[in-house]
Image 1: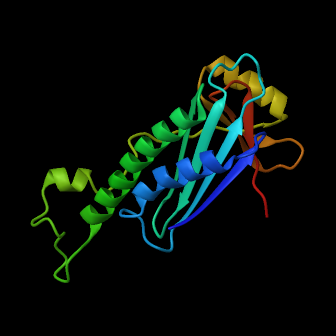
Image 2 (image 1 turned 90 degrees about the vertical axis):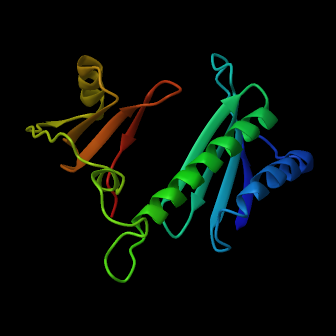
Length: 181
């Protein structure tokens, strides 16, 4: 596992770096040697946010990319919470991968296929929606998002004509996803 610790709006001291490396070393057993782990430590400058010590980790593996964010009033506590949550995510991802392994005869490694095994093979789409999209600005999309009360809203940008997504962020405000390339 290759670990990179960086700071945003904060200088990462040697003690915090060592503490983070020690905590992240718990992942060595679960992750492949080629996995890349990026830990970003930051301090939110907004005075209305009480839990302003934020730790965010991104793990690039051969399988899924995992991301966990934790915030508290103490950076060490944020790192502790983040490590626990990330360990659960890694175990969950490894469990899913093991559940999908198939032997040469086409039977899953767990034995014969049951209805419970079918449910655990992956996410199931349970509802499909179709709707027309009129071009609109990001500001108009934010207003629509507030009106419908959902966490995100898909719209066609009147500037580029591309499909965009606006979403409500956990710490307040909105995020905008635009396609590139």
